[in-house]
Image (cartoon, rainbow, N blue to C red):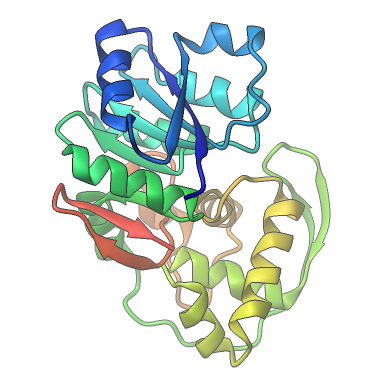
Length: 253
């Protein structure tokens, strides 16, 4: 069994010790960190996963962890849940958002899903996006785009027409398999394009790539434009469904 070096980041000692006990005996080998300030004083290069405990006052910890450990996948566990907190944690770089009422079984499932390079979002959030989005997409040829800005504000020379097609699929919540079928290409080719998009745009995951595309007005051709998401604050999207959790979360490929 492959062991996953896992960080627990929280200011609350009781919460930290509870999570350590929960993960004991699993493949998620815990490396305890008290709070984000301690990240700069530890050798955490082997870490692959971070479980970050947040509330309204501490949402920024997700961003600090993402900045300090850019290759680590982040699961945000909210002690006090609000829509704004969820949106901020995803924008800061979390691949999953859970609330304090998550069951131990579902928490472990979430860690497994995230380490498999998927995302987990609340079902209620997905439902609101589905109501805002157009239900049908009619795939068709699109033009390459030039003169764009990356997520970090630097200049991006261009996106190919194929990359634009892939971004539309991500924003519509399509898995690699569905995107491949719609575009009549191999699933492995979709994976290669997704990796290239993440590298070009300078984002960490598919969710952030879809958010970026919507914010820049790139997503079109049947997928929901950014202004349709105004009631959600900053526009966000999700990527292809895979599995349901009893806690009401959805795992996304």
